[in-house]
Image (cartoon, rainbow, N blue to C red):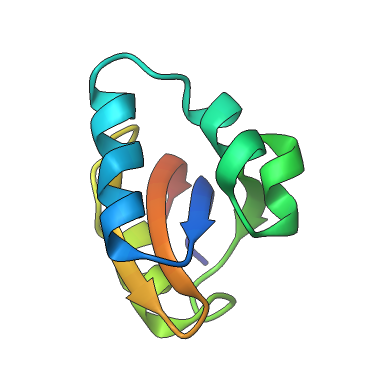
Amino acid sequence: MAQATARHILVDSEEFCIQLKDQIAEGGDFAALAQEHSSCPSGQRGGDLGSFGPGQMVQEFDTVVFSAAINDVQGPVKTQFGYHLIEVTSRSD
């Protein structure tokens, strides 16, 4: 079964999510920004969600994680929880 590892930053607004993505694109540290701004408890671990399989995350999140390029920040991705920046750090089939 496919497995992926990913990290994310969860915020309340699309605008703020875009601002954070711009900061990362300009060299900002993903983990540090997650620790400072993410409303998810994973933020304390730099946004690290560990390893998971298809169907363990909400559909919008799953779709990105199991299709996006590795180490490429995706988002904003809207889910019932808010707006995410997602970086897939590894994936195996």
